Amino acid sequence: MSDFHLFVILTVVLVASASVILAIRFQHTLNHGQKMVLAMAQGTNLGFVAGLFIATIFPNQLFLSSLISLFAGVIIGGICGYKLGMISCLEGVTSGLMSSLMGAMLSVMILPQQAIIFIQLFLTLSFCSLLIYPVLTNHSTRIPSKKWFLKPLFILLISSGYLIAGSVLDHSPNHHPVDHHKNQDIS
Image 1 (cartoon, helix red, strand yellow):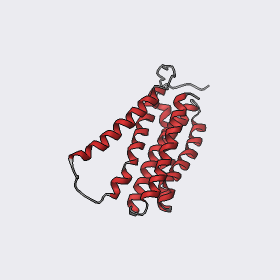
Image 2: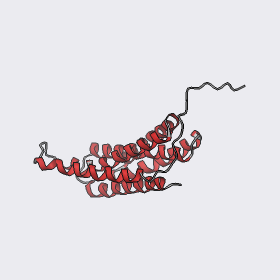
Image 3: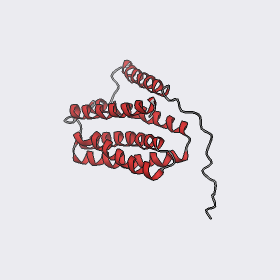
Image 4: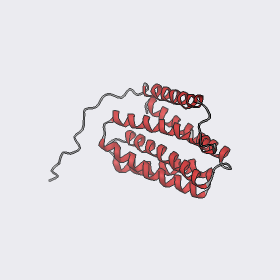
């Protein structure tokens, strides 16, 4: 396993842990629909990362990577939703299951470098979806001041810098494009 793989695992664990901590902190101030949205956002983003990530570990083994991805997506989605209630936990589980399978299947259609870009994109979305917790507890419909925009911008810059630093850890060689549309005659 490369340093980039360890970076992705650590990041998924940190985001899932932060999701549980934020769920514990804000569970009493969120309504039922908000809890379901949060569980779905975290389950979908982290499940997709898990599907792509596991498929990069087991290249050319779609069945095995799909099975392991399904299991990982269910676990991650359940972890992200279990402190928000039973229905939210079920929402996280089903979102993680569906998105992990989509990530594993997408990995067959794209190059390894493109999979890394998708992993980075969905890790960024996972970071950003953590910001939904405090936003949903604020019941104000207007923006308090122009300085309010600085905090999300600052967090976006920090998370982007973190993910760019993680992509430097990827030392995989550039692969040649694979033509997935070839018809192979099996005789």
